[in-house]
Image (cartoon, rainbow, N blue to C red; front, side, top):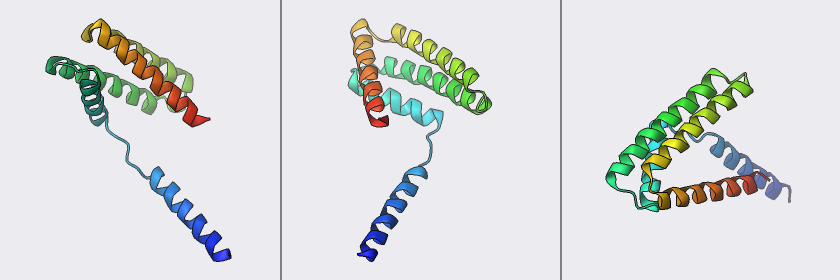
Length: 120
């Protein structure tokens, strides 16, 4: 019985460690993933995909910079991230058609709800 418990604990430890060791994506990789996913999900044109990539890259770089430079000051970091997100949203509104924008906002809300559910 002890061997089974030790084996289970060892497996859990290895699994937890492997999740913590996953590499973080660069801003470029995240922007590419975003533009590819939105291109597929929203049926974007190639021009829209390129613009979404550029906007997402700018946002991702700003967020990463805010997190790196203000890790000790959460309030400043959050305000800078909020500004980057608001700019991203405004630019996305100009790139997407009204129908695509509505669908994108719905997708974001679903992701937030799923993340919130996962945290609880």
